Image (tube, rainbow over all chains, first blue to last red; front, side, top):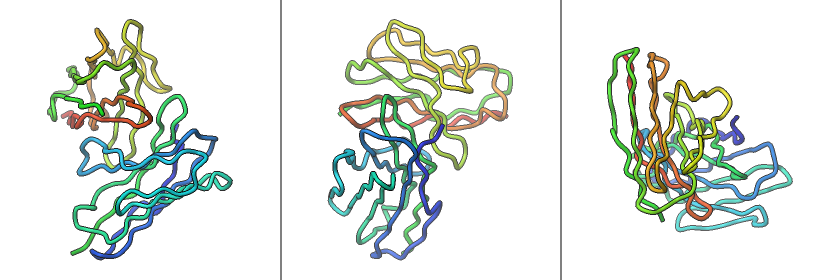
Length: 108
Length: 112
């Protein structure tokens, strides 16, 4: 069963703008991860945030985690055409469960 | 990190036939995971494959339809048996390395 629910399902923004995607989950977690998938190929791990962390940065990525609300957000700043992809949150306990994903399209 | 080679990358198969997908990892890993991603959908875990024991299948997936082999710590296969058009999906293998997952490039299967 799916644990994470991302919103929006799809997002189109102009290049250079910031993109924010949200993820909600249902049960307690050890950590939450974000992945990117280009054109239906393999997923690439972007960032992991542990349950005792509230915010984490990696380059143009910023992830927040609110365990009281069971939600996380992924912010991509200064978006580029190469950021066009699907983004999935995933929660990990004994196995990794993926959300439905957000399709991000960066307009030139 | 782990590098996973998955093949074939894509195939078009006739209904009623079977396809075996292979995944080779460049390091020894205890568990390998097989996922299905139907068109426009997220990843659904099919099964977890441990070396030396039978795979553990998730609800909705059975061994007769998706037999899995795990002969050693670096290799696994997933067979999609008696295929129907509903099996058209991307199939991905994955391993956990530390706290993150690494994926093969996926096998895009089309059943006609």
